[in-house]
Length: 489
Image (cartoon, rainbow, N blue to C red; front, side, top):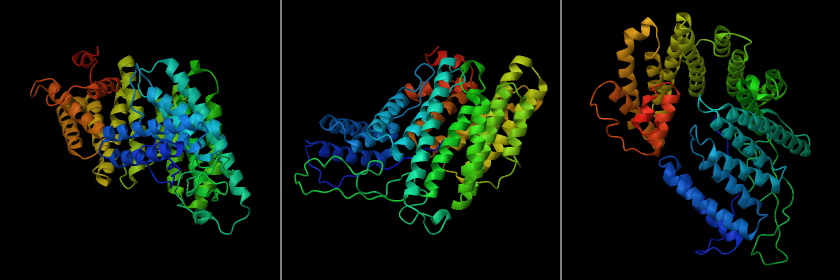
């Protein structure tokens, strides 16, 4: 799920070498944050160190002025950058801290649309971290369900705030993507600050800038109209939260709101708000993809609730993504399509271990093949995306493990292809964590193939390596004995 973020409010006051006041610590934090932004694409570890220092600076600003919305808001944004992937035994620790920081921001300004949107996104990220693993305990799934319900409610409030602010500007000429977008980018996130001066939910600031000194100092409040695209962004985020909720609502022992509740909420949101807004803003293609993902989640939820079987889930995927073998779609659609096929295939593969049904195994084989074709097409559109090549390697490994004649016949070729894809991903520029994942999986494939028999040859053991191994075992790529091999079993 790509997350939309708002830029923190920037202060124009001159920095001092040794900050003393709240404003000076705020400025210092902004400088550190900007350094983190510069390193984020190439070295997330180094970027993280800058973000951590920025948070410390914002906290120092808050020690001197606990009501500083700017420091609280900037701190909650940087906390998202520090979110790391969890493990089955340490789920969502960083995400929890981020959510808490966002909630503190809302305490200062409950109706700030930027803070509302980001809090909803942080809750969704936390829920995603909690259910990332197949063996996630039911308690964690229940907690994720609660966070997603809260996110849906917060996005709803954000929509109400945005629609009220838009209405407060009165009738405007024109419509569509250009309506209200002359003051800012049409694709900017909800409430996206074209505002160079701090503004708290459209109210005048009650606090003067520290160090302003003069009784005649004034705040200039600049308010820009909320655009239709910004409202659509929030509605899409709410729909995505509903889609994530659906499979969790299907689990009986989570209790709470029903599957029909989440389904009705998403369908109403689509028909009454999202589709009309897409037509006015010219974003029909983006909305069509969001609708398809929601329908796929509904198909999965129906299966998990016992309302349909695997063929019913399969039908939902084909209805949402017709022409599964097509290669003319956009990059994100191809990735989402592949993910839908992988989720179904993985579930079907698990069922073959329980029931040993050849038809179910063949269904898994067929959908892994659909996923492979979509990923191949995506790789042609974005050859520099190392994550796509890793996903291609994963699918080849999963196909090779199936108990169907086609898999047995081509097993060696599939495993060899996986190694090639992992090796290609390792050589690409990009996120350090992704390169380590590619290197570890390549080494695991090489070891299991009996070539150069040294365990994880060329890979320096560390926490990320162990994390990758845990994930690979959880996803069914490699056997559980790997946990013992890396001292985790």
